[in-house]
Image (cartoon, rainbow, N blue to C red):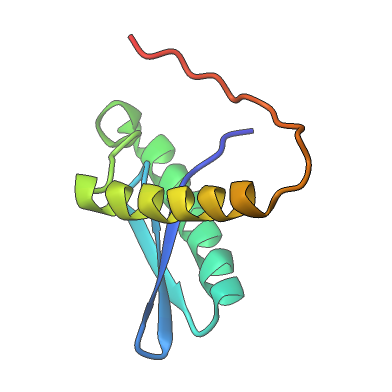
Length: 99
């Protein structure tokens, strides 16, 4: 199973969603609808790219860096809040090797 990063932003009365690894966007009237719609959009995108044989050029196709920065700023704030509220001393590491 692949995991993708999705940034969801409220814009007026609509929630926009962006898959950061593929630069595929969608929207919905609620967060759950935005999530459902981005899943469908990602499925269609991957299906179209694979059918056309263009995987090398279009997977991955990253969103602009400023969108990634927004995502990781929110993730940082969420982690900070969880750490400050946590009474447990249990934690896991998710290792990534750079290089």
